Each structure stands twice: as C-alpha cells, then as structure tokens.
Image 1 (cartoon, rainbow, N blue to C red):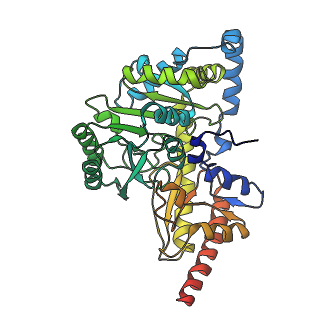
Image 2: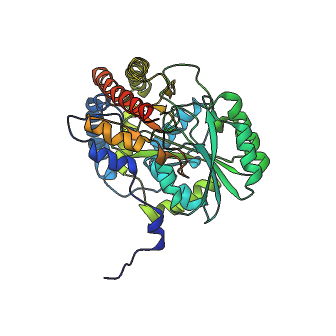
Length: 400
C-alpha cells in the first residue's frame, strides 16, 4: 500500500527517553534515566479513601462526561494553590489538562505557525521539543549558567528574531539541568517579553519540590500584561498516573485552549479529577509534598556525594536545590550516546544529553535522575558509572 502518512510525520520521532526506558527495564539495571517520582511515596491508602468517597457520594457523575474546562472544585483548589505563589486567578483562568504534556501540545497547536521562532533554554525539555517540532518552528537556543537562562543572551536573540512567538522556560529545577532562574532574571525576562511583545510559556512541574535554598516566585508573579501562560501538574507532587495538569492564563487564551482541547479529548478524566479534588478536601497535600522533599533531598545529596567521590575530577555537574535531575557535562570529545551503550553493558543507565538540544549542538552531556532509586542503589550505580567514565577518559588520553 502507498504511504498515506502526512508530511508532518517526518517531523516527529519516538521519544528518545521513552525508548531508553524500554531498554533499562531489566531488573539488574540501575536506571537514572527516567524522570520518575518515587512510587513508594504515592498516597495509595489515602487514595483508596478518596476513591470510595467519590463513588459513594457522586458515583454516576464521576463516571459521566464532563465539561472541557474541568471539575470546578478541582479548579478552585488549584486557584488556592496558585494563591500561595502570589498569583490569584479565578476558575475562568484555569483549564485542567491530561497531564502538563497535553498543555504543552495544545500550546504548540494554538500558537505556532510554520517558521515561527521559539526561544528556549539550551538545553531544554525533550518532550516540549518533540511537541513543538510538529509545527515546524525555528528553535533558537539561549545559553544558561548556574543561575538559569542568561538575559543578555536572551535580549540578543529577541533582537535577531523579530518573528519570535514565545519564550519557553522551565525556571525552577529545570529539566534537564536542575538549574533555577534567579530572581533578577525572572523580572528581566518579563521586561524583555513586554518590550519585544512576545509570550512566555512558563512550564513549572517541579517548583513545589524545593528542598534547599530560598523559594522564588514564579515568572508569572511579575506578569504585568497577561502574557505569561503558566503550566503545571500534579504528576510530581501527587501521582503521575492520574494524568492531571493545568494551564493558568488570561481568559482570552483559555477560551482558545478549550476549543482546541475539545478536538483532542473533550475533557480530562472525570474520575481522576474528582478523586484528586476529594483528596485535597480530606488531606493536607503540603504534608505529602514535605515527605517527598525529605526523601528527594536525601537522594540528591547521596548522588552529589557519590559523583564527587567516584567521577573524574574533569567532569562538571549541577547542584540542584530541588526537582529530580542532575546535569553532567563531560569533556568535549566524549559522546554520551556511545558512553550510554558501555554503561548499559555494566548495568547502569542515564539519558544522553544530545536530544535536549533542539538543534543538536552538544553530545558531551547527560542527565541523571535521583528521585526514583533508593540511596543504596544510587551509591552502587554512580560508582559503576564512575568506573566506566574513568576507563573511557583514560582510553581517550592514551589515544591522544
């Protein structure tokens, strides 16, 4: 049969991270690859109570079709959470999505014309690259340092690209680097967006998982012209399997998002929304988040300590104050894709860094996840990874 696919299919491949996770499912592999929350921290018993309450109190309604915008009590609870961040939306500013990934996908559908410039951090979230790539934009990367996206570089890129549609940023514990955009740069980003009349897509799945340093307000906190579209999720602070995210934006944006979502799935899972709303009614989610932060801090500290002990001293790495990831920069001649194969032979895995650069600029980087492995496995896995790194770097030195 003749190929019937659209031309658009040539723009999208399977997620590299998802493909790697398939390879690392062998029980003997210590995997630092996925951005997975710790499953032992999921509030299973509390969810049983919430499920029963929903079925007993609103059984038929919870299994029926629902409105596209989302379950009102859940949207109200999200407004309250946003209020603790200094942002005070109404429910008309909130749309519930099927995970924040749907929010990212809808954003691409809503705003990107072919050839539009999208400015992002270098590197940036792989799944956002894949979602936006479908609409064939021009990706312009802005360099980062330990304090996040460099504003002088951002201004230069805005000057050079007059057709910029939006800036895509993950300001808190960025995926993949774990870096956080400092306060002054958040304010400056708003100033530049206002000056050059571009939108900001603030993707914030990790902000609540801060276990060190000083809490910072979202970029949207400084928004003076309603040009920041804020995306977040319950996946990292509650459970990813329920697939619940949200968009917080000006009503004029939400109306368009709603229309596009109706063409995709009509509405987000009614049962999952009501279970989550009931959980938020019956329990204090901040207590649950605090438990997560304690565990992730221990695991992050363990991984950083082991990297310091076992990795070659020529290797640089980030020191996150929250979130799920540590970013590693290898000597320029080292290809982390080739290194991944050698590490997998030694039963340890990570995500090579190249796919996180939309224009494929760097191969000497990798991402490590610390949230999903107990401390003993972290120590064992980082030691194995360090041994492979030492061997490979010594081999390269010998060849030189």
